[in-house]
Length: 223
Image 1: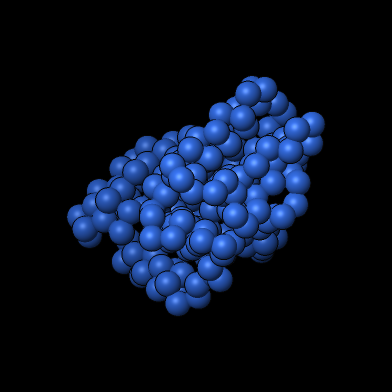
Image 2: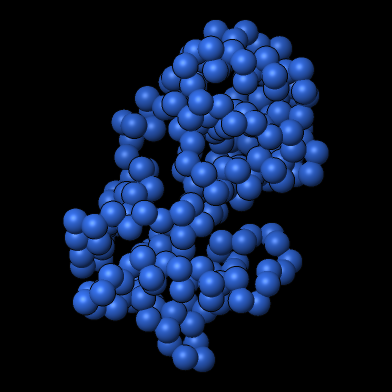
């Protein structure tokens, strides 16, 4: 499995990375919430081990932001806090499980195995529109028999368009859905991602599905 560890305690982070690596997993790591969220948003992981108390952005905020972006990766929260309210806040934000510090490495790995088994067992419905198919769990997008080979951010755009198929979505709507809580993004960022997605979605000779509605925004519709 590919696992992301987000922990600001350097000693604990190193222990977790080493232990998970020795167990045969591929492990990436981040030391703060901002970097952790960026990694989780732009790459595909099988599980995320996330400390609640992080510099930059706390774990609960990170989970909430990832879920709003459509990132469904199972999240195991690590917490040194003892109040039930803190734990409930994390689970309500979208975390799948939690583990109180201090903990044993055996228990950590058992929790991760449990989360990933659960994720494989409960699959979200495939989103379809004409020849277009998107699996929210594997994050794989196909047009007919062609794999679109989307990046993580392009995948988020496609999922948002599919969940709003047939509707006109404005730049402001897209910004609010895919960049929650951020005050401002560069004016052309959305246009750039839409152009990249369109180039992968429409091979030569294929009818266009993602269309620009001038003065309003974009609409994904059946060819």
